[in-house]
Length: 453
Image (cartoon, rainbow, N blue to C red; front, side, top):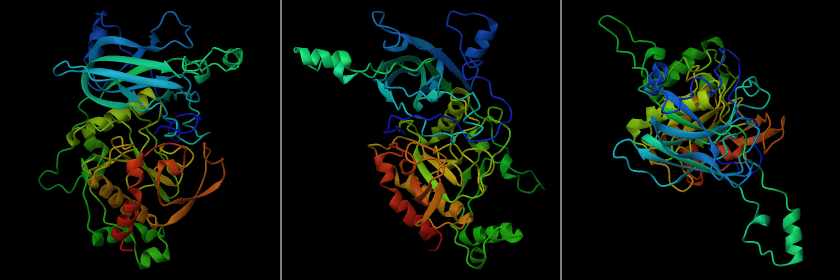
């Protein structure tokens, strides 16, 4: 998720205006602990909410622009996910963001953990309605820490190597070089700590009652898996109006539909997102990501992790919905991401410059040095075999996408990409992590096998 280049283009999500969202730091801000009004107490104990705390200079003997900023160690109401935001999404944070938290159960403090500082590469394409909404904020990647009730944060500006103590300053030439060196970039303005409580989520709908038919998938916790024959039959039935090519009709190349946990299944609060859905014409490629939220979660906690990411994307970063089209946990369970229909070409905000005609899949966790589970890699293959098969795409093949602008390709350039690509193929970033990226070749081959190729 962390960009390799010192380029940060407006962070946002993907596309149409609908119901305006509140500014990220308005209603979500928690009053100081000594506040005792009824309203403050109600907010303090509300499940599914965000505490937003301003960062302050931690070293008084330095100028505000270069001072280390943070939140001194303090007690807060319970939260499970943490991130840092700032005012301008086009401003890059040059420095290190570290956090340590206190477990609500037992009171033990964690070691310092580092947040990924580049989240701009997961965003809507430049000049889209979402990216120009005025609500978007710069942000780190969020980190899942589990239920906690204490926090300490520090943001250390990037030091200019020419001005550090490591460079000897004993000669006139060295002193002149030091004076001529440009100053280190200041920290972004408006730095705030976001502490997200995922809440309990929306209870899934009950099963059908006596005499009732199956409930609609919009009201169900899960979309059931189908075998290959039933998936092909469903595809042909949906393509009766002429949506399928002659080749698809003659020989459907589609993997069996996997089981998918719906938004209702993971407890999405649909009041958070904008109401309208935004679609692209076709899904020609899949971009694989890691969420960079850490690996310290149980699979039973995955819905809580997703609710936290959703709230962070919308309320803290100002996106219109969660950025990814699908998410996968380390046990291989697949979850619906951005709203609009799992079988449809929903425009996401996952790969800046290449959101059109693609879908984004995030594997929950951080896979820079840790290998993804075989269950997660298999889920990538199952999901792409089905979803790409709906659009006649070969998972082992190549395709062309037109860049919407980014730090690798200029706007309008047609780029040849793998049908299943890593995030780093479309943007200069380390996402989806070295270890997950290395598994994509296997995922492509397995997905093609599921399609009968």
